Image 1 (cartoon, rainbow, N blue to C red):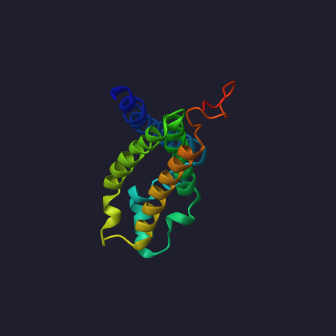
Image 2: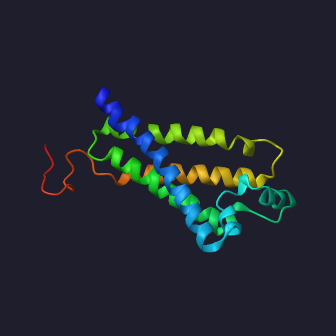
Length: 163
């Protein structure tokens, strides 16, 4: 029981948080170095005053901004999709579903960080961007769960399914 909790919930949650920080900071610094701070600001549009002003004015939409979409896609694949895949790999059917628990915990934490998006003080495009971001992370985790090999699956190299 403890081993299952550690391998299917605790370790994946720590990996999601660590990889999220690593991917985010590495991407930020690389883009800032190569393209400048103006482009790097697009990775976190909700945290930059000049982009928030454009949001309020209606001249900016996160879902049409390539830096925002690239960041969301990379974070969806790297931390969420890959970690869920590894957590669900070779698990029993009941344990496979436990592999989504770290995703739900991480999404709850990120939802709290994005709590400003749920207020009426910000335009609708902020809420749409936040919902799209959280949805992409959940989708990547579900894909990771679905493509992970099951215990006893003939897709594993050199093994046959046990009847």
